[in-house]
Length: 206
Image (tube, rainbow, N blue to C red; front, side, top):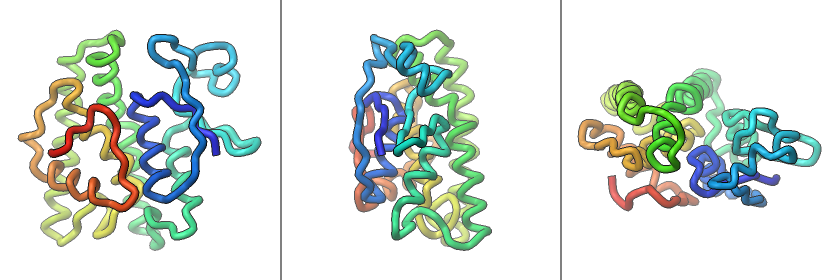
């Protein structure tokens, strides 16, 4: 598998994190996304006409959708460590994977505005991120009342790995974590997973 990667892009980190936690060997092809915008070059537009990263290649297969990439990498883990076996828990995982890649896309946007000078109003984006984090924090609080430590159940799933970067990197756009105690505890649990890797911008403690 080849991952077309930019180290500071949150979505690329998501793929690297899943690969590391599942002990997958992924070859990195580093892209000059900032300031070079190489992902929008004619060569890369052939791989992804939307001009976005990450892109995953595996033989003739080219994946451009983040959730598809994450699921593809996780499914290649022979132990299926982050893919629930029962249908109900798997459905919960997919529901929160959709939240990570859809509803929390606003966190990726806010970080790009604050860190990379992308166009946008970081204050308005930060408000939207707080709403999404409140939903997630409340869910994790309810999970803990049922003795479950992760978003889809009592074991970490692909959804947890996909959700973690948005919260962990949100200080890059000046979002305070004190209002989200359940998220802070959950983030600490994610950091203890075998194979966990970090990236610039993620603090040592939450």
